[in-house]
Length: 151
Image (cartoon, rainbow, N blue to C red; front, side, top):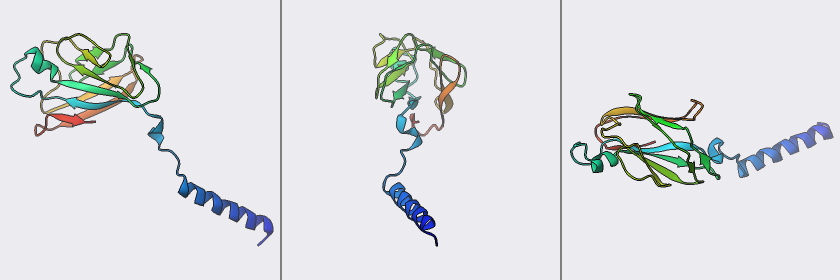
């Protein structure tokens, strides 16, 4: 074996050993804005009270290291009930809860101001889209055994 081939082999072996010691960061390491939880069956009877409506919600998490403007982003269910975010920035590492009923918006909670339920109690699909219409994330559930889905 020539010296060049031996050096190349040694460098390749060293590179492989380093890769085992220091694996590449996962593809999602940079973070994302994504659906994290859907609480689709509020506790108690479905009596359309504001308390019951607000116990139905979707949580959206920003796992990036910077704030992300959600202005114009849309949260929609399979029946095309839409919530469009107003001018709003979701801070780095923060979660926003989008409740079905009425209330006063804060940085951590937004309200759809609806008087009827959005999320079906047995199966549905949440989709989060950018203002351009491109899909950011989806989360589906198909169960009446539990009341929420961790996405």
